[in-house]
Image 1 (cartoon, rainbow, N blue to C red):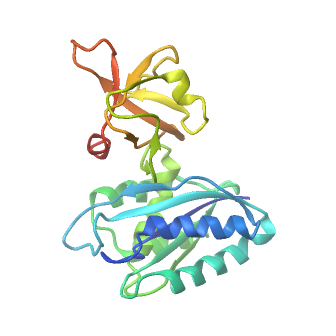
Image 2 (tube, rainbow, N blue to C red):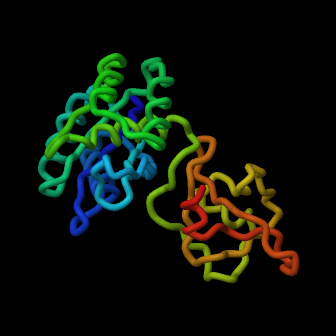
Length: 247
């Protein structure tokens, strides 16, 4: 059984971030040998004075391939985990979607896109969850995190939203690496320009920073690059973290 699991609004400015809690969930699921989980994606949502959030208003989502007989146990675990590990005063939301059961994803992806550009009410989130028969629950505070959790699943389903949690390092800033070598360890699926052109393995790329932030594009983990200056002998260079944030 293939699931998408998303959480939101579990933290405070002084506590562990929601991304760290998502990683802890992954580790516990795999330690219990219930299944294998994918990397976490961070999905930026609408920033507005009417929306309570900690620092950036972003949801965390990951995929889990689990034994179907563990489905109910996983939901029970996730609810208890958030109630135990979320920061006091936060508004945690938890969403689990089975994407192997012929689910009509249009309502979810539309909701996710809405949550990036407008204030969305909890009642809208619950209505969609009830219509589709997916798990959506709140675990403290005002429960507003359910909006972000549902939106996180919807945006992950688009395959074209979000940044992967963590960093990849392939050398120091100013060094070059071939695309072939960058892809060799299997952590990156492709290198692509901001405009969507796939960069050939024979090309090389200039590292703008030591740490590379990857994004979700076409359901793949992608390194984004841009053109260098005309005076540079290397055509492509990686985007900086700040440049990736603007995508």
